[in-house]
Image (tube, rainbow, N blue to C red; front, top):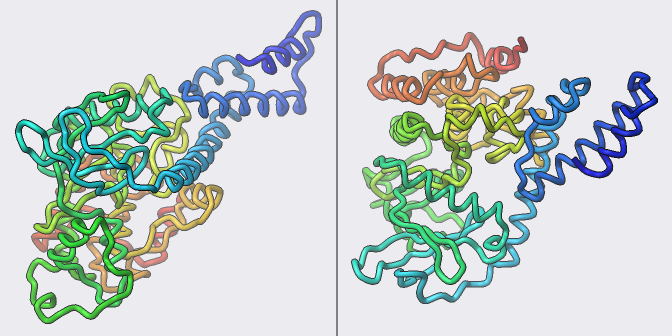
Length: 424
């Protein structure tokens, strides 16, 4: 513990003063402990809430309530700081070779890495090569997270998960090679679907990939050939949306059966190719399920807006991925984010209250069964959700076959909010 905490312990608990700790002293100590806890978070030393609770049992309830929320806000700030750092690194990285890979071009940046299209020198195989940005390469916690992403993803072999083919270090930089997906993220897709045309063609996905997402921002009317394209994804093509969603559910089922939580399911981590195939990427926050009981820290992983309520308290499991899936599916159907708020306080409050606008209130054309599926996937309490990805996959399959889904029907649009907000 820090010198400040030790000094305070001597003051409060030392001999000969054995008097009880008053409310002001407890509050002061809690503030000191929180300051230390956040300092440990920033240095990447993985502080654990349980350790603090055991050492300060008289503050256990306050620690359990406060520390995870504070960690969530710190994570938000860290993400914003990372974004700012990346903006400073937006100059093109000029590399010709990384390890055995010849660089073709940069195709994207996200999180802590830059992704290149590359070719293996001997086999000629085209890959997506992710390189840890120099700004993070010398920080232990970022190197460990990057290497964890490669290890976790390499364990998972599934049609709807981006495969990791190779990883290593070259000239002091970490990298790993992935299956090259010539497609775009659902984040890009949703942005395009909001435009007046309300549709995206297979050729547009291909062109966006080739252009590095440099399509013109102004809208252009779809051509006659685009309107007739059977592979075009339209704003109200609910069955097509269901086919995208069921692929994600299958991938999550596979990951969970392999004892792996993704912990950061969101539109930008789902890649759609021109053939309609979806793949999960970015396992930088993935965690083995059996480790969960040992890692009861308040390091709140994932993107706050898609985070399940229990994750704010460091208690993620398979049902937390189901919640994030539901929040992502909500956004795909409504073209609006499920959780509103422009700052961490508002977002956290929205997550905890579950005051969510029902999908059909946003768009009455959304089929009721899809609203029911989202409703069940994003329940406030984990035990009220689909308990596994397999269960949500089965319900989406029922919708695709025009069969009744198992998710309970909503009595009214207001019931979505009211039942969602029930407290135990």
